[in-house]
Image (cartoon, rainbow, N blue to C red; front, side):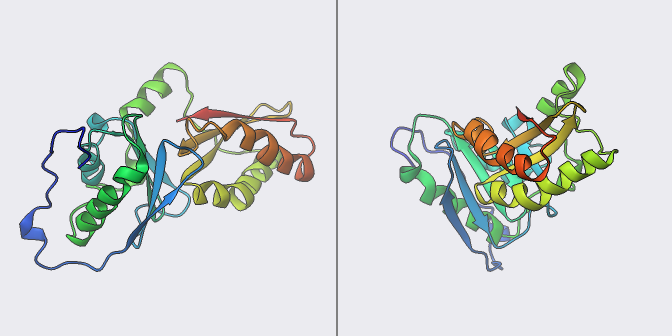
Length: 222
């Protein structure tokens, strides 16, 4: 544990450690200095889906996320496919703590404890509920027109793999019919200093080549 923090009991229940499951976990840095990606040899969500927690109060159906928030520096936990992206505060550096976090995740998974108590695709966090009620911000619209379907195809085929490799996720939100596409950024992409550059130089450039009628891509952060 980092010397600036009080020791917290994060021990795995001994009853579940008698038969360990072979699990590998390794850490990868991301373009966002506040986040670290932990790639695991297990699948957390279905391909293309994700779930994000911004506070321990949202983790009643996600035991692993709840335990990770017990680390005093953790401010966000994001699951997608076979990786977890963790966001920390500014009080510590990842180089001092990533080994401890990686070991804890590996021990938790090896012990065979529940990661979720219900399917992650059905979990809606309190933050998502409030945003949906107040602003409709996270209610992605189902693509209906051929233009919308083509936008989603490009995002899924060309953009999502690159974003996931950086520990994040991108979801289609809406198209205004006048050239502006709105997407939702999650995980390491949310709050990342370089996300605006990625939007303008990366995603926007891709649409300039493949769908010139798309003149702007804007992002909402989950």
